Length: 243
Image (tube, rainbow, N blue to C red; front, side):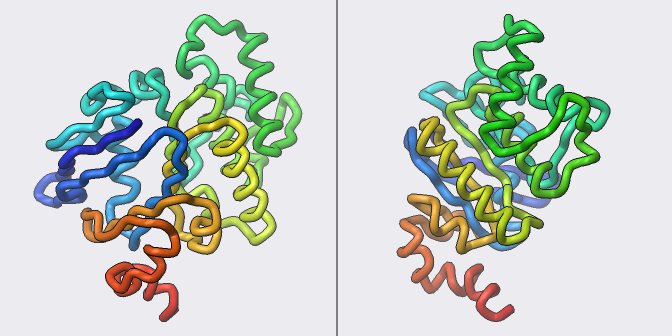
């Protein structure tokens, strides 16, 4: 479904990604982990067109999307949530999700009434109960992340890039977010690549894990294989054990 081929990303003289090769099959739930600054969000930015690759190629469903714009990539069927929630603060929560409906895959001719109906459906799906006048500024951290997911799902994606959807949440909210991700994967059949620092949650959900360090992939495998890999323990997992 998604193929990243020998991708490099430079910011000036700094190389954020070095020869990344990554394949994700349709229907997969992939975890993407690594220390802060290892390049995880940069990969998401490259895939979604925020910062195109300096060299290499990104292919989605067999099509080269390396230099498409973010809206074109969204129309192709790739959506994302952001590590720091980015709602449209002047719009209501429902209007925020309606934006996802209007700009999503195959939905350009949607009416306002239909978009509103769809927005409410996705808010219900992620467990976010609001009235029509609720503004993003009234939401808790956990509910802002639910809003991010609802807006992303409203674009009708085939691939979801989920960036630290559990950051800053308490244990109850983490469990609720886990259930939502399960529903997205199992009930909707959406392929997910998930960046997360809460290892227990991630390892219990994903089927395969890719590990980054200094902009390079240093390991791949099942959660069990990765958690026992000495290179991974030294580069990343060991940091948590020492903390």
